Image 1 (cartoon, helix red, strand yellow):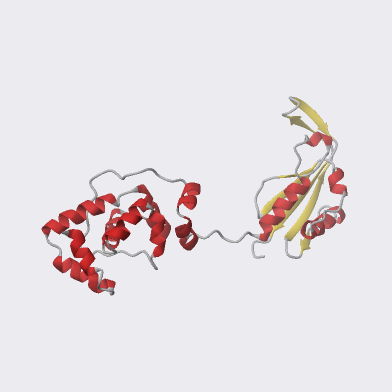
Image 2 (cartoon, rainbow, N blue to C red; image 1 turned 45 degrees about the vertical axis):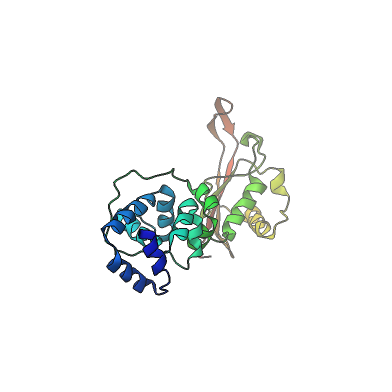
Length: 250
């Protein structure tokens, strides 16, 4: 009864008219069938779709969406339950409360998908509603710095620089003694400009780097520090710290 009524109404192209007509013609038997159909939409995958589209989900939204989905016809309804990414075929994912709000008495079906799985299983929906932002050139700079200066070798050998913490907007480049790689001009233009300023900068005098931010340098005389790898204190002859503050407005 429900699906016969819905299939007949899908001929009405204006969705608002279709929904009002559905409300007027829905009888008690159809309402019971609608309640069962809506219960099937109480699925973690469908809830995830609604979260992607609307940002938040509650029982009222799920009910309104379920009625909207039913009114798209049985084929679209079954396809969406089998593969929620097919909802990307619609110009927009809507909702309507013309048939009233339904209560979901059964437990939510299926299993939750983590973010990585959701992006893999819902590629078209994610591309439309949660597109991956273009890479930040500052992040590329940080990665180049890591590749150039970060080293697995113990710092006591004075091999290279290490980055801490590993964030985009506040980078500390710490070294005990500049290693061999630090004496070679990097091939990447972005890093080469930074490398040149790091070599010539005077401690305590911050400088502005066009397109990057502010670079400063501090020096510390010899001191004793515990070396976890050695298991005892060791003498550090000196320490130089470069602080790079990346301008968030660039």
